[in-house]
Image (cartoon, rainbow, N blue to C red; front, side, top):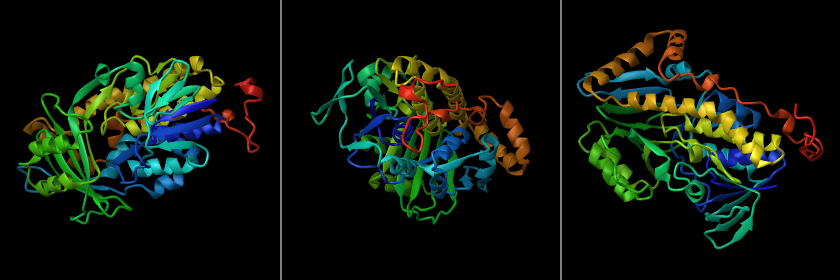
Length: 419
């Protein structure tokens, strides 16, 4: 059975990894001309994703590439002293197993783990998908596939082709995120520094193994902004409009963002589809159920979703009519809870008023002195379920893996007892 995956960032290669080990032939098509190696921005892997990474034999490389950012120092207008926090204490309140890693580093690790077994096609994209699995590419080529999976992010091309315009499924949750690669003129090592104000946050952080740093901007607006997700010139102008009068190092970071080759800007938006599958096509990761960039643990959700989709396809012997509904049922609770958590986080991450600003500063001070056991217990009863990731236990699919001889462990034609 031949599966086409659109997208070579995180969800695509993770899905390819498991599908190959279940005996599927896999092709991954990626619009970019080559694997992205600019570092990207920092993402989080929480317990369920870390457990899957370990099953993949990739725990070592992932740990080797962790950012090492452990200190947060934020200036607050009106306060003489900055607010400081050990980020390890915050993470410990959320998850017992966690790694922060640059997104492109994670993508490269997954690519390296699959490149010898998977056909990767760069600088091309899907132009049309037929009901019988016939796919036409932008390059003009046409090929037949048994299944097509969209793993191509929030602005998924596969989702647009099969389900319709993005606007039908997106819910803006009130904020925007921008990240740019900038010179590390502050010499940041293991810490993030920034300034926090009403409705906006600007910061800069370094990461182990990176010569440069990342400028980070989060801001809230009363109404959605008018721009196209590929119009970086417009995005840079909007960023400057909202941060030009903010102090600290912000003016310099804006100048660097204007000329940065690696620049990311997007709304913090949720996808809400009733189903992620139609015919021979399904979606995984942000393409199907993005809970909100920067606030919903979307990278962990993508890794888990890829693992579950591959496992259910193997359990069903490749029968998508059985596998796709089982996949959606298995991952559905994690998706819904991630959405709820993202809505709560988006409201609290950037203060809306002077009172919120004061309250956030006090909460950080309290977190710095309370025992970790207390903050962990408090997080369990907070709104939105801060420890939702550690409560997720993906299904085991160990009997499905190929044996060392290359024969499928399920028995002849996947017809044996699945237990």
